Length: 380
Image (cartoon, rainbow, N blue to C red):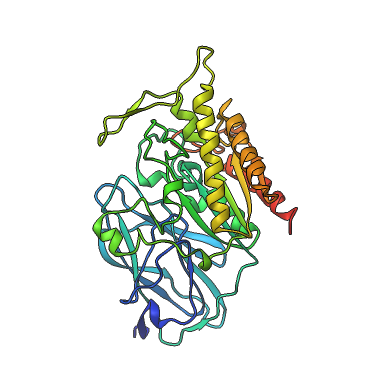
């Protein structure tokens, strides 16, 4: 005889925790997950948990993962359309279990039909939903492919640009947050920067999207789920904001110019006759960093802000990042702003150290976690 199950819309569950920057549970009792690392967390005494999910996309499917009591036990592709997924079964119903369903891949700005929704949760009839304990800290991470976990699935020979090789659950941000018992938000997009994407695309930049729930997803279906709504910063007040941007701005110096199809204007981060970043363009980056820090501080008045770089070498562009932070410090008098250089992927020697798509692998992310945890512990 089968187990008696009951299905609950998310607004029928009093004890649940929403992870990441979302528009919250809608009037239909569903939750859209836009960003990598966003998810749904339950503390339950149960035997079995299923979720009803709904997914759509053109080219880039969404991957998810399941965590039970702090350990990842599965990673799977969300099927197109509606489906039921078992997160766990045959658990001891007398034991308290922490169950987390996490979106493992970033929003794909190039796939404007990408959506992921959790519509309901199904559990055995005797399930008890317990209050989800509050974490000790709150951390926000803003970044690019490194913060999205690009290259953390697949072996080093994999070079195709597909969702399959992106796994935020293995990256420095998620692991740092788990290590220090922090709730966290991640805003990241592969290839994007502060003033320029990796290919000089002047629209592939994070700062203009910072105040939206998920500004880079803007088709009608995504807007209907709240992607373009202004984010309510009172909902998540981080103790720390880590910004890991500038790697793609640095790469743009090596790439051809990009022409804006709407205006015909060309954009290019240029080098001088000595092959160094042209001072004018380097200072453009410094100025943009200063402006972005002012916005971050305005929205997060109590956070300690730290700008990160170094997991991928950026050469002389690092000086302009440092100058941007110093410019902000000088103009604002803000004493809660730092920079931190993370260990480089040049430390990776064996295949097990390395990531796919030429991105930092497990070793580099592990070393970054150690440095960030040490940084945080200095203030706790």
